[in-house]
Length: 164
Image 1 (tube, helix red, strand yellow):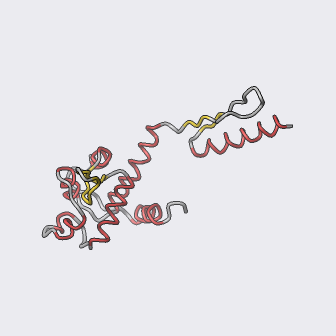
Image 2 (tube, rainbow, N blue to C red; image 1 turned 120 degrees about the vertical axis):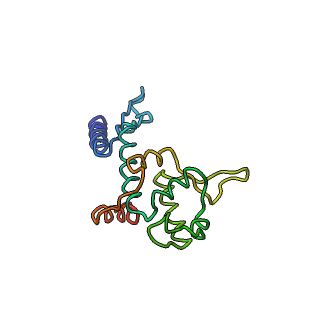
Image 3 (tube, one colour; image 1 turned 180 degrees about the horizontal axis):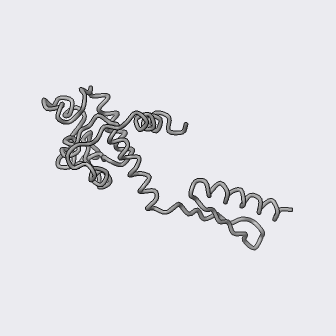
C-alpha cells in the first residue's frame, strides 16, 4: 500500500516537473523511507534564452534610448543624475521623475540588464550595464525599436502581475 502511494506521488511529481522543466528523483533507503530528493533544473541555455527574450521585450517597452545604455556601459549613472541631466531627451523617450526612473532601473536590475555599482562602502545608487545587458543590446547598435501594443501589454503583465 505504501509503495503504491509512493509511486503515485513520484508520478505526480514527475508530471508536475515536466510542466515546469524540473525533474525530481527520490530514493528509498534501507528503512523504506525516502531520502532527500535530487532536483535537476532545466537546461541553462533555455533559461538564458528565456531571460534574453524577457529582457529584450522590456528594453523595447521602457522609455530608455540606446544612448542611455551606452552611458551606463561606460560609466555608472544614478536615477537622480539622469533626471537632472540637461540632455535627458537624448537618453529617454519622455521626461521621467526621480521615483519613476528609480522604479525602471530596479526593474532592469531584476531582469539582469543592469546591476548596482559597488564601492568601498557597499552598494551605491548608481547602476552599470551587465554582460547580459550588453548581449541584449547587440541587435540594436543605433536605436532600439519601439514595442507594439501586444508586446507592451505582455510586458505590463510581467511587470505588474508576475504571478497572474
